[in-house]
Every structure is written in structure tokens, then in C-alpha cells.
Image 1 (cartoon, one colour):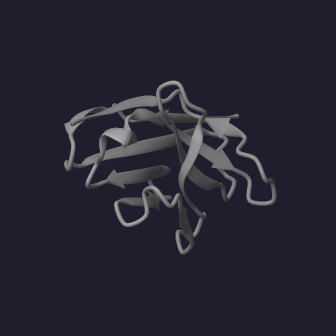
Image 2 (tube, rainbow, N blue to C red; image 1 turned 135 degrees about the vertical axis):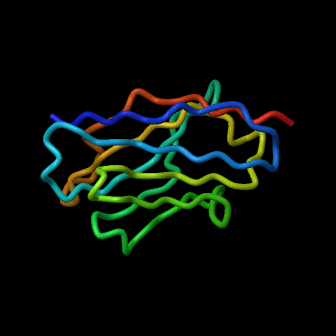
Length: 119
């Protein structure tokens, strides 16, 4: 079993920045691809960003490209999401997730953390 724990989110004004982290524990020996997802109020959960084990490949939703950066430190078993130029529409519960590379779906999920962007 893999446990994922996100850092606390917060309230930030539009145009501001916020960083999230997610620490992995438990069966962490795998070369997991790590991702961030979010669920805005009243909407479905959506993909935000992902990074491979090596960190040399990343992927972003169009809505966050150029504003958000995903990175990881495997020695610390931690993945980060740096969010800049935040917009009110970025308000959501943000989830960290881990995926075994050969599988399509993410197998492990964090509990989620609230990010609120005020206008």
C-alpha cells in the first residue's frame, strides 16, 4: 500500500502563488508516475499535471500550462506543485496521485487539500 499526504493548501489572492507538496510513504519501491488532480466546486475531478519517475517528462493541462510547475525529489519521496498567477477558477480540492507506469489509471490517492483563490 502507498500512502500519499498532501501539504495544507490555503487561501490566496488572484495573481498570487502557492506551493503544494505530497509525500509518499508505505510501499514506495516502485517507479511511480506522480500526478496532481483537482476538483472544483460542483465539478468533476480533472487532471492538472504529471511527472515521470525520472522527472524528465512532464505533462500539464492546458489550463495551467505556463503557470504551474510539477517537480519531484525521489530521495525525499515528495512531489511538488508550484502554482503561480493563480486565478479564481483554480479554486478546487487538489489531490496527489501515484500511477504504476504500465497502468493507465492512478492507483493511489491522497486525501486532498483545499486551495481557494479570491478575486
